[in-house]
Figure (cartoon, rainbow, N blue to C red):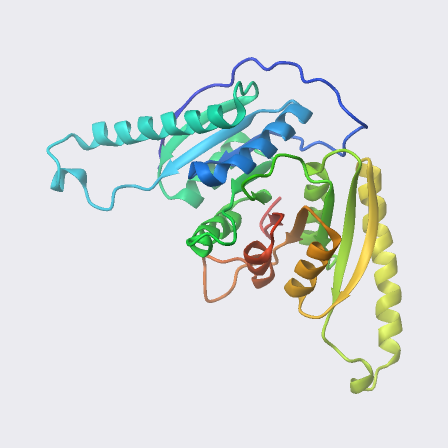
Length: 313
């Protein structure tokens, strides 16, 4: 069981209204996983904007791994005192990161814990009833980019809500979202989660990547027309649901080729600032990674990426 230190949020100031009505709200508080300050900036800014928009708490959580060796083997110190000192030092760092990034953070509380990072974050999110977890991710050019993203993938696998990965330097809510759509429950949840994270005057593009199957070559050329006609009805159904839920424009895209490559290419060419997808499950041979498309999107995107795991409510 991870041990924690925390602060309660200060009394929030009433935010000033702006622009048109925004899409449907998150419907609950936000949990921000704060690791290194250099990657936390974008995540904190986005979380602060969402917290002010929806008047919900944003909770910054820092997690440190347990010591590899028992402290009594190397230091003449009480183990509990050492753990408490590490946790208090981490809590100070988390507070300083929030303060440097946001100044007076009216909607925020802070916490530090010792434990396995992904498990602790997922458990804290569940206990607090968080509607969304937000994490910072490094630039793609960072030397440890892959290792940090693997840590994010572990959080996605453990979490019961969507996880929004935000690059550093992001200081606005996304307004153009590309949502990978296979019409499964997971992809529909991803579309709804993307809607709740968008700013005003926003657009969602529902993108379906056609499977690599030549219907004519298998002697069933008529199936292609049936497939495409069915897609139009499914697109209309999901689009209507999103329009009813929030003030958002919805369009559709029918893509071809490798799923992740097609989505990343469309996202770059279309200037999207959010890619959302529903993960269909865990890669069988690696219990720490979610589906290959989600992994490829996180590793290849220059924008924010929202993944809703198959286990998410």
